[in-house]
Length: 411
Image (cartoon, rainbow, N blue to C red):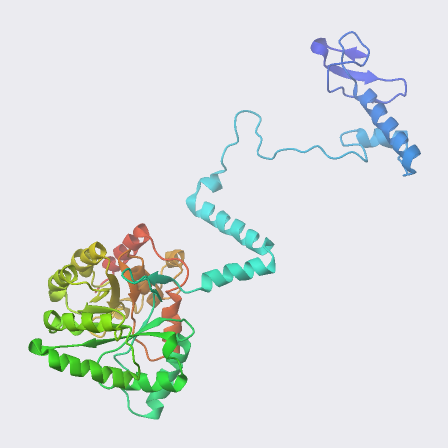
């Protein structure tokens, strides 16, 4: 046997003639107290023979054991576990690709996908259902929860059966999202009557949260009352979920009557509306002066004035904020500005797959906003809009990014 100091052997030969490199420094019989690899092999061979005698399981010959031991493990013994993150010196270091935020997000996404695939079928179905479920928000004064995407109907004042057919399809699809807001007004030509007819025909009254409006020009309360009675007839309902003073017209005069009708149960919620930046200060004053459940106001990525005046008053008073013209409306549609602009990749971070969804999700990302009311007469557009009311919404940092992107676009 040859060895060097410190108890680490270069070579050891046992009586069986099997040689190998020693790995420890104890008990093989020499003065340094080391254990030889050869002795270890003999012990393993003895264990294998014992297993064979006790169980009848065929064992490899001693020569085979010795041969397999050279540079590898003995058959029948488990492999030695090695930590791939362990480094020769110091703690594990983060790979450069993981330090890169983009790659880290990609790896996280792949990991989440792997986890999702590993889930049982019922769990994946539950996860998908949660992603597909509409986002609901409460009207603070009543606690009633409504889907965050409703329907504006200022284009529902139609006459013929052919014109009503696509509107019927829209209502049928919207009814699949219970308690969705349908917003109308006496000034939208005969839209109240068309809605009343179609909803009654479909038997869907209980599936919708119906909102309409009233005016009292010059403070004429009697004219306002007559208008509200007509709305009940046109909408074919005994109760209106939300009655609002349209564009603040006669608000101070008619609001006490709205409150009385609410207490009597004919109206479930009351409020005011404006679609004019010049009325924002008056709107905020009325919110602070009256017990309003809802304020409807003009707000979009292209017109953010309401967040400086109206939103703070609503948050202060616990008044729900519902947005009209959330896509800019006829007077300033947002789509013209992005007509030839591709949707940025980062829009997916907010769950948006179209410009309409990005615009609406931007609105809904504001903590003061309860719901948005984009108008449409097509099921395809409704489907797109409803997509904004599911999944993720942009946080404050993402909203600032959307604003910066929008502001940098040529007008």
